[in-house]
Amino acid sequence: MPERCAECGAVLPAGRTCQSIFDECLGLEMANPAYYGQVHMLTVACFMIQHGRYSDEARNWIATQIQDHLNGVPVQYIRQRAAGGVKQANRSWQIMREAGAAPQPRVDWSITMVDIVPSLQDASLYCNQIERWARATVDEMKAIN
Image (cartoon, rainbow, N blue to C red; front, side, top):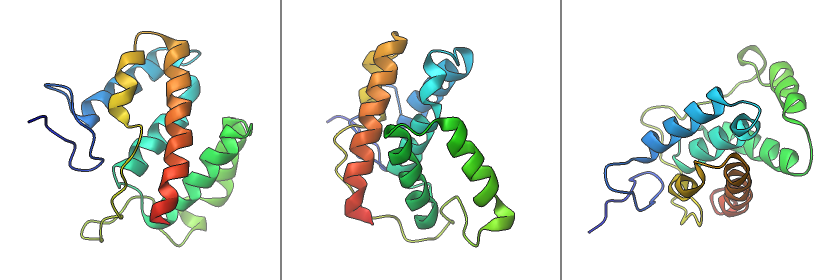
């Protein structure tokens, strides 16, 4: 029986976890920011959403940012927005889901971290797959809002 991620439900490749795949993606994005790094915000946001790591308020905020970015808003503008309005001194909510908080409702995600693995060797394919993942995540997370 294949092992599944307890958080997102993905069927895991042998010897891998969603966290290890995520870490590999982050390594690629940091080592090659001009190529892989252009989708960094989407990679982090989708992983955090699908693994229930964001508080409900943060999840809703980042979903709007993902949608804006997919509709053409540059990441630099989203970073400025975050620096101005979402820094800790300006918000009443936490970014991370607190220990002991009720888990977010379960979603059967159509694309998960595991689906990124085949594209790791090609930056263009990788970026396209991350964008597909982001579109699917934003659409499917409507079930938890």
